[in-house]
Length: 132
Image: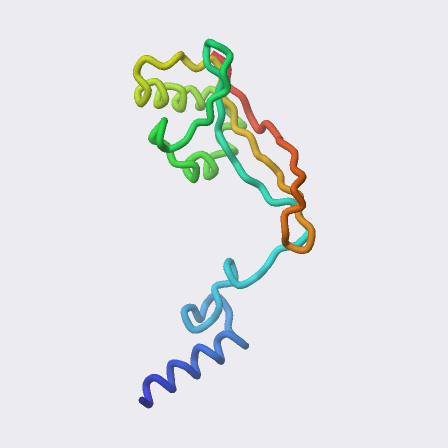
C-alpha cells in the first residue's frame, strides 16, 4: 500500500513539476504538449504513375517499405531524387505483371486546422519526383 501511494505521489509530482529527464515520473513532452492548434498538419504519402498513366498509391502492402522509412529520409530523397528508383524496384518485385512505374513522387498533403480540428480543406505539396 505504501509503495502504491509513493509511486502515485511521484507520478503526480512529476506531472506537475517534472520534465523529460524524470520520465516515467515526469511527462514525455513529445506527447504531453500541443503545437499551434491552427497550424496545418501534414500527411506524407508516396505515389507513382505507371506506364499506362495510372496513378498508384505506394504503400507497405505493395512495396514492402513502411511510410516511416520514407518520412525519415525525406531530406535524402529531396537531395537525390534518384533514390526513389529503389521504391519503383520494390513495387515491381511485389507486383509481378504490373505496369512499370515511370514516375515516383513524395507528396505531403497539408490539412488546414482550426482549434485543433480539421477544416476539411487541404493542399498537396510535391516534395520530390523521380522519373524513369
